[in-house]
Length: 358
Image 1: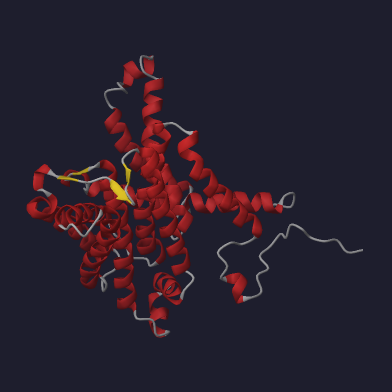
Image 2: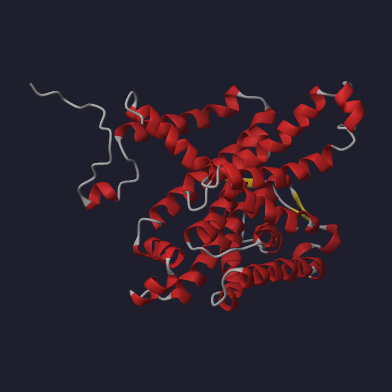
């Protein structure tokens, strides 16, 4: 007697077509469609605070996606990602304010392209470095671009900052959270689809080869310098895209926002989410956006209690939020070094193989 196995307990992909498929099975495809439909309904289901958090998760996830491509997929460390995030914000505002043929919907991808060019310029000298030397080089890029922000008043508005116009297309002004949510969602979908497809191409596999063993990759004919520079450019593109969305959402861009602390926060996102994981960029961004809200809620819950009076939690809330980022990074490196994406994969595998999940 033969039994039809409706729930395979392994990975039985036997063709290149199945191996290159974006979805492992039909269930993944249908769940993705349901998730997208749910996101489309979010502005009608939740209050303004939830939509605000989802918007923040969106543009931070786009920027983290670029950093994960650079650090997680290519193995190039960067501690200057916030500078490129800020450059995208200022570039979009500058293009829109100074050139009438650049409406906001066009200035956002144009700013991302300009940021990619800047990333390539900084990637050229950094392409032959690795490890600690590369980290110092990207740290230098962070401070160089920050200094440019403060001095180039024609580009950034200097210490006064720059006003950003709201997103507008086809006569529709996206001037509130419920409307702007769909703009961010559109670019999130485009960005994650683009990187997912990139990693299945020859160039994507070359990135992984450079990360895993650069000597073997070079012996196979892969141009290490080319792909390292390319990864810097693509990473900067997504950083600029996220920054442009961020700038037009706030309506004002200031030079103080894009400091080294934000760069460390981006690194925390990809470490917590999972290095080299596309879905990990989204998970890490969501975790880091929701963490300060959790700290704030916890402090308010303990307000007036004996613990609050002893530790002065209410007064120390800004310091608690900053310290929590470092503490979370340390805890994840110790107890969950592969990130949330890996743990999610383990949970899915457990349910898929149940009751033989060992």
